[in-house]
Length: 145
Image (cartoon, rainbow, N blue to C red):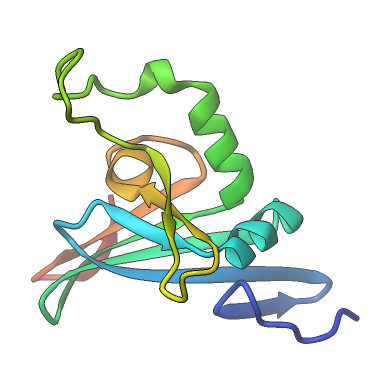
C-alpha cells in the first residue's frame, strides 16, 4: 500500500485496489483560469489514469456548476492534440491581445511557476468523454449536462 502522501491533490479515494486522487479548484464563474502548482502538475502526470480535476464554479456563495475531468493528464493531452476542435478565438491576428490555453506565472512564494489553465476553453466549453459537467437547477439540484 502506498504511503498517505496528500501533496498534489485534495482527496484520496480507494475502492478495493483502485485509488483515485482528486484536486479540487473553486473559481468564480467569470474567471477563466485555474492555477495548478508544479507539484499538482507532477502528480497529474505521475498518476495519469487515476488523477482527476474537479472544478467548482460559483457566483458569490452560490455554486453554479461542477466540472469533473477524469484522467486529467490523459484528457489534457488528448484535448491539446485536437486543438482544431476548439472554437475560434475572438482575438485578432497581430493584435496585442491573446487568449491563452495554458501559461506560466510566478507562484505566490516567488520561487517557482504555477501552471495557469484556461478551464473555460479546455473544460467548460469543450466536449470530451472524460469531462462530465453538472449544472445547478432550482427544481432538482445538480444535474449532469
